[in-house]
Image (cartoon, rainbow, N blue to C red; front, side, top):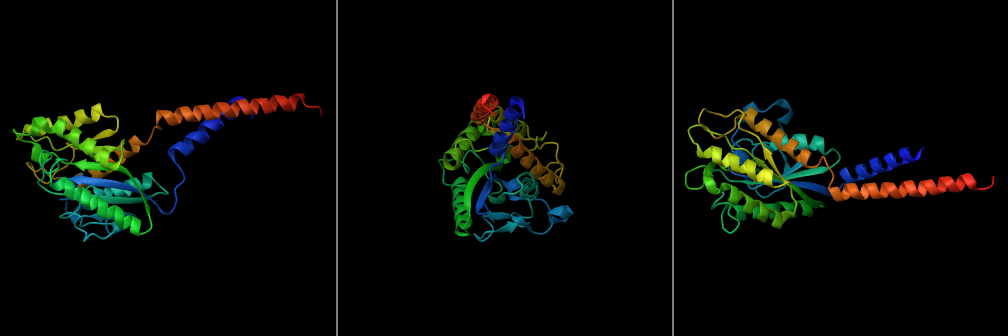
Length: 291
């Protein structure tokens, strides 16, 4: 093996360890899901594709309508289903070998400026309570929990003349509080709301979500305006729209994990350099040693 081959092998091995650390059976990667009705779920069970029907026994699920019990991912978390079903299915494929859990608390008709205000006493406080109960249930079942991302779909109730222009600042503050609670660089996946021509403020809110994602390397914009809805003037995704939205959330999270942190890359290069130096010295010593 040449020095170049040794260096390449060292870098590849280091990157593999960085990107995909070994998973233990009792470790659980936890995703939080919050927002209003589209996250709660308004799509009809009849529109579910075959692979999402029934229980997904390899994905754990805890939500505010589940009598505070830990179960497996299936329909019934909202009026019918939301993006969690396809997200759970896709993220399990992406994170093969990991145990996955979703904790969801979403409330239809809630706004960001008051209901999800970090300083308020509304939906956000109830969300945090659900998260605490979900984490406790996972830990009581013998799991070590790690919160690895949050899915957010909300903004329709802020798409009005009084609050649309404040959405960017409010969302920035909200994400900051979420990270104070659950992790400094927590990936935050923010879904686009429908851009309705009869409600011009919906364009302001969606543009605000895009702007927050553009300004924050750990926030990801999930496009959704091109998806299908259950009526011409409806906010709510139909079955096909909800399924595709969940798949896009999974793709957004995968993209957040595709490149190791710069510090990890530097460490890999340094480790590889040490390997090359040691290998080279041993190789030279072997050549000059008496036979």
